[in-house]
Image (cartoon, rainbow, N blue to C red; front, side):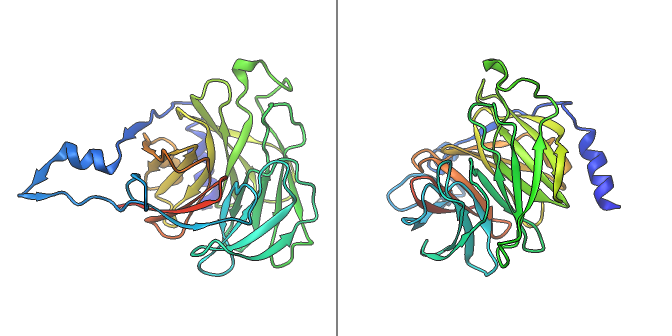
Amino acid sequence: MRHLFFTAVLAATLCSSCSEAQTTPNADQSATDSGQQGGKKEKKGKKKKGGDIANLTKVARLDNVPESSGLALADQPGTFYTHGDDGNPAILYKISATTGQILSQIDVPVKSRDWESITRDNSGNVYIGDVGNNNNDRQNLVIHRLNPLNPQIVQEINLKYPDQREFPPQKDERNFDCEATLWHEGQVYLFTKDRAREQTSKVYTVPDQAGSYTAKLLTKLAIPGQVTDAALSPDGRRLVLLARQEMFVFEGSSLAEILRATPRRISLKGAGQTEGAVFTSNQTLYISSEQGDLYQYLFE
């Protein structure tokens, strides 16, 4: 089956290499460096009003969402699901992509310990990652699987990491916090936030079905920052790992190839504590911040 082949390819990449990120300058700097071509100035990317981040536009405010920490496509075009961060109620918010207005609230009948991410599969199920682990000492990590149209039925995907044996481990080994999850072809991918050295994001997977699992460690990515969310384009050829005020962009013909690619590092300085990301098309990425801003980023 396609899924088994895909898993085998990914497993071959296990810890074999780390891809080093390449920094991409802001468009203003790029245009200056490249100068003029053919007697005309090179076209610059769009900017957000009042800012200087190329291709980034502020589109709305999420004034009534407490510390947006994740984004996923909702059941209607032009809408997203989002949720609060650590310490906030177990509520999913359905919001407008154009106004940021809350369209509905969904009370999820579970305890919210540290919700950090949300991702959606092709059948409309969402996976809420209660996998925040600031102190690297949690032994109750769980992903909640539910359909927002019937939120009273929640399935639990319990997980542990195969390489964690101490809770917490030594400070220089604390790389078991996770704020980024991604559903793809029957698996939920987890990307860790390196609190020890800010050098490596480990990539794990668990099945998307209820149960208790030891996650599979697929590979390690050289990420000079702390990963806060993950998003895959609809065609599966572009992966974004969001971090605070920056993002890392990987490209390839498959997710297996993407995870072996060298990422581009794009600065989002000034955008706030960026925590949520989701693609609406192959070129259009939406980003939310804990401060309540909703942005649109356009890839060229």
